[in-house]
Length: 355
Image (cartoon, rainbow, N blue to C red; front, side, top):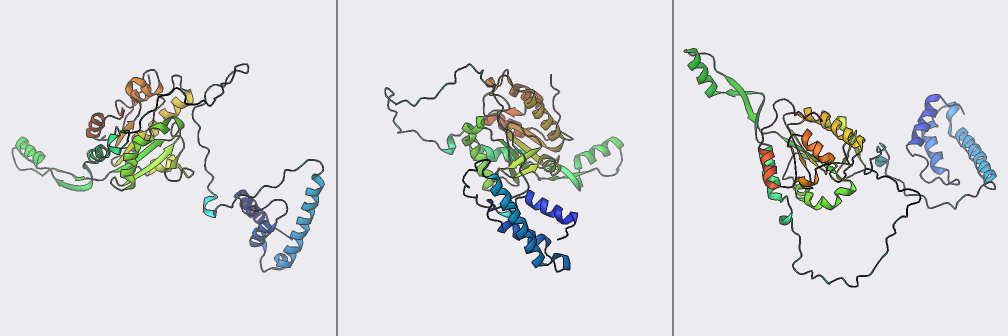
């Protein structure tokens, strides 16, 4: 049975994406047979179905003999139940590996590893659950403050090709020239803004997730629109991940290309290295590179750090706060409102140079 290099390459690509191997356990060759039949069998003298079946049966027989010959040499574990095949739409693209939290130094070989021992609750006073409750109004960033800050951030700006008369400038020109001159036009105000929220979902941020919920609820309920939510781990690198489906990666280059320097408002939620006194240089350089790429693409940038400012001292968070020139704040409603009232950038968002 003659195959061209292109036909062989089609098989290689299909196998690389998981096709034909869903139920393969060394005995079940039906999926592979069906895939090869779809790729190769055509109404032609060299590719008819009868020739294919004969060749494939010969191939399977040889492979089964090879497998049986190898069994006495090494014990094969009993075949486990094959995993449920994924939907075709979820097999690709392959998800880029996500960064793990910043690793801690490994303990020395002779050091004793602490072992957690389950103990009873003897001697602990009973705590009454009466009066203990948590409602959204008790969050440090209530939903009302979230919506008010969004209204301040998306205030109208003068942009675009649409023009309107600038009466004050026209009167001032007539006064300076002493005679009626041409009118002065200016761009009309436009209230067009979008919000992009980048959330650090590393383990150290899990205890602070409830404080983010009012913002997530406002976006999911379309009280803030248009808006998009993405995840990252420790710091954003070449990929961001979908909020609802964390396994779906999106290229940072594509996301940045869709931003608008006069409309895109970015809100970053993360501790920025405030939990580590000795941050890795990779963490520092990665954060600086990301902010450098982001700054010319946005109209406003606010970094929300759930840890209080006194916890930033001596950590990477203090450096990030310096780079952002006051645009990092903790969960303080007055400070968030003050940042929301700051005018949008005219050209690009500049960062302070690292010291």
